Image (cartoon, rainbow, N blue to C red; front, side):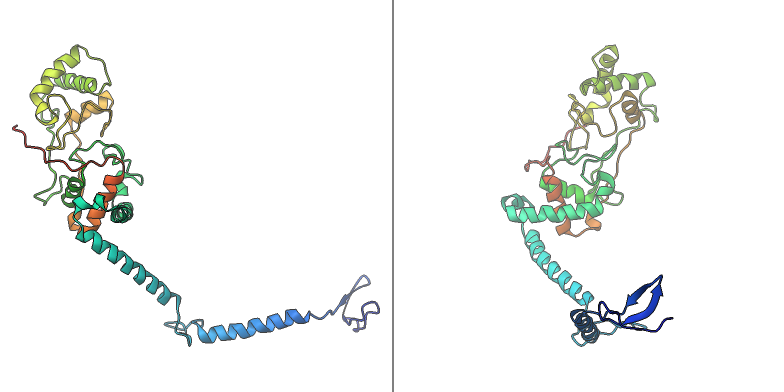
Length: 300
């Protein structure tokens, strides 16, 4: 290593390194940079003393100010919970029938219901509540059991075909095929008639025979006109909404070996206010109905 010397052009000492005649200068750092560096050291020392910083075996140092991100988050969560508690108390004290008359409260209920829906209901009904095969679309105005707020709340509380709940929504379509209640030919004929009702096929000899089979075996639940009955949760067969598929094979399969879904009784899993908010959210999706008088039971 060569001896250090003073560079004549800059009057700066060299570091003693030389490569092919090129020497490295030992240029000092700017004063402002050094003072900034010293300030960061002082700041770091002060931060370590004032705030949690030094890790230990069981916990970090607490700092002289007693602040921590956990405490701050806990306070923010508590404040948010207190704000929600006030709104939830108002929702709990408001009869369900009066929620639509209080727009601010209804909006809060819908927002809370949307959050609860994402946690509990999207697994079957989908993130947008559009459903899928075998799971109802909650955005349309086709309701198996009724679409007003009170009816939706009742369905949420007691579920559909929920074992152990005496007030659950209950109906059961006969297994016309597996129990040999109808012959294969009769099943094909009544499927033709159902497809004609739903405007999926044109009338023919098969649907003509199926109309008589339908009147004898199916009209008691679906009605003589095929428009369904909410008393039994029997779907309307004359619209374009098909829960389990609209092809001939799917209709025949549903008649022969019907699929009947089950929805949990949320009354045993969620608190009453959350269920009320869920009812408000489902009602707001686009197909909610006004309150209506209960449907009168029909004689079988």
